[in-house]
Amino acid sequence: MSPTLDEIRRAPKVLLHDHLDGGLRAETIVELAREAGYDDLPTTDPDNLRQWFEEASDSGSLERYLETFTHTVGVMQTRESLVRVAAECAQDLAADGVVYAEVRFAPEQHTTHGLSLDEVVQAVLEGFREGSEGRIKVGTLLTAMRHQARSMEIAELAVRYRDVGVVGFDIAGAEAGYPPTRHLDAFEYLQRENAHFTIHAGEAFGLPSIWQAIQWCGADRLGHGVRIIDDISEDGAKLGRLAAYVRDKRIPLEMCPTSNLQTGAAASIAEHPIGLLRRLHFRVTVNTDNRLMSSTSVSEEFAKLVEAFGYGWDDLQWFTVNAMKSAFIPFDERLALINGVIKPGFAQLKWQP
Image (cartoon, rainbow, N blue to C red; front, side, top):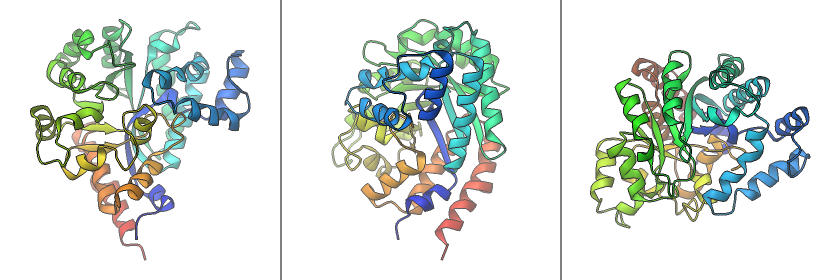
């Protein structure tokens, strides 16, 4: 019997690629907009708003997809709103059975009402602590926008808060025209500081983006990395040099199947590169990207893969352990979650009557 969605929700899961401003509750957006006097929402009915986000994100264009964030970021400009959104994020992930998550956000996008970068980070960290309630461990990734020029400032911010909840750094935004090498000084600084970072690469742009992220910038993980498939023969029998390097070095791929369909990076779940990459034993992980825009959860992403590829509990555990191995927290903490929470949790589900 294939795992059902309800059963998958009970499994201990790990999430590495989730955007804070892409996972708000529709009801919260409406309430925060009212409090802040934000009048630009397309509708103030939560159900209609939820549907609008999903439809607006289904354009097949990464650029159009990114435009939807104007509204979520627009209501996340005060300390109180950031604390609330972060707390609800932790609660929603825990309710979906996630035991460890790394949630990313761009501090520079939340300063239009006067908050400093430090105040933004402190508010989000407070929210995650408040919402976790001992049910989930949440690490934070600080993101710099690749079309801006504040990556060094954000990298220094990530290092400054790395002992109190910030576990790494990222760059995000439209890939085309904004290669990761524009931010090389920030990545070199992070490496000198023994800090972890991932880079959005190989989502809307191809192999050159992945190559730069790894070989020039030294990324620990790849955000999406879908286009690595362009360096692999259709039957998977032959890997190009870059694909072979990614597999040999066990560089984690933060795959987000539903989101990739929405931005045109894949045609369908059944045709998503994750199927071939899993067969070839790349370090693949399964993620949500933006739970609001994609109307999804980690459990729902797994359920779609079960339906498309016939995956069973062993496959879902493999993806989950991959993610935990790839997390930006100390080795002993990763091992404790793998051996003490993840494997026992899956064993219980595998052998249930």
